[in-house]
Length: 382
Image 1 (tube, rainbow, N blue to C red):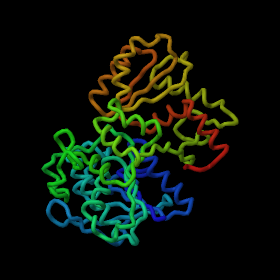
Image 2 (cartoon, rainbow, N blue to C red):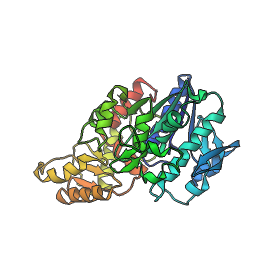
Image 3 (cartoon, rainbow, N blue to C red):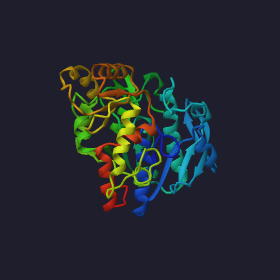
Image 4 (spheres, rainbow, N blue to C red):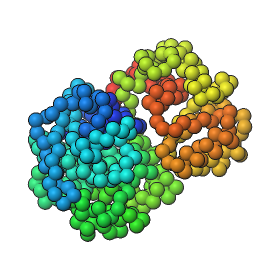
């Protein structure tokens, strides 16, 4: 099959979280199975892209903001996966380390979505599957179904939208809907972009895509509940037959404690001696007592943190499980600080997202042994 991935980030180009790992590893796994795969992402002004991606020899005309705009397409295949970069300096060349957080994020990624669709039309035969990730690429299936619903080019193409984190929903001013290339009629509550008085790119994608996936069966169940559904649980329940939870795989070229450069010591399924050194290194980094013997874990943005901040005083003081919280929400950061103050010997918080810290934490957890065990029995990332 011909499969095109559309993502806002991917290793080794740009990474803020697990989305980048999946966007890098899954195409490789499918390529090994004989599929024809490619990746499309923005051309950010970051060193890996600027040094390795070169003009592909063509560009695309992008109908956006009531006029036709032009974007050159860049290309690189050094990762083994044909990767196409959409060049839009006005949106993605801003001298920033992080790809998100600008006031016009909705407009930036709406442009990227339309440019990605136009790029796919030039690349050759229509893809059998277009796989998109989170709100940043959610307008791709919306364009394929709505904008190009009568175009025979797309008749044989199926779309898949993967939810990595439902908390981020791509909210934008409804007045921008025509600017993004959609009819104002699409702003409606039932079957439209409208979401609690504003517009949501994620909702548009969830309505338009043929299939929906998320990162585990458990998360697929959770996001259909009011507690973890972030007010989209009703829509997800309505599409439950099209929703699949697929556990993320592991790319052993990257997540391998036998040779990972970010951890204090190496270990394997046959020799776990280095794992204790990794645990001690992690505890020292967060100024936690070495007497803690339980598994470490990482909690990300979501209702769990809000619940934890109110329930922790009742938790056993002798618990030996250190926690690390990561988030980008002001409210959640405040709650995690509360957790840290109340349980200073068990919990530490960290602002931002450090790939080194994440690696150290995961390689000192129980999952690291699972990685090594799986490595001994299989070398597949899927």
